[in-house]
Length: 277
Image (tube, rainbow, N blue to C red):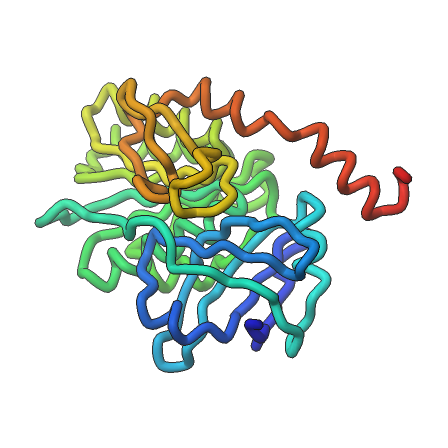
């Protein structure tokens, strides 16, 4: 059992939790994830490690309540215990030697995953241009944290209610065309956003890394649920990733696989809400 030592509601649907997990905190690094099971009846869900504190022995997860399992997890409070937290899993993000300037692009709750990437690079002395996109001002998360761990933070809103009016790809292209000589771009967020970031950077020949979180069950490469096609080859996000060369990812196949259980997920939420017997 793993105790929740801090719980914070970041916006209407996004929750932050600090979990007492000293053995995981000791080994965790940017880009890795944990698999969480809130109780004995819950499914196993992969969540990227948003932060960690080796001295306190805690790891931070940030998640959006969009399905049955995340609803159950979000119902827990400080002092409550999570049944299973397994990790750290996946391969930590590897950065090119000698990189000097990187754009880290996050979309929505994906900013919780972009944040540790920016923090790691910032601590390495890299010029980090962090581009964070949200639909509107009301759902912005981690603004102060991201500002602290980047050279410059560019917040974008689709409706123009805060920061830059436009998509993250618009701001990224503006920076590139304005002379920003990026060694790498790291994109983390909804699959369509990552796809369009890759389409933006490809004509410029800028290496672009995406963090993939497909359907995942065991997190050890045994079930095959998280398979993705990269460069024409089958890869497994849990052991080969979650980071991949975005220019090589088959996003069309990824979108199709991720939608496999949408109807079943909707029914499960309805059952939890008392709408289906």
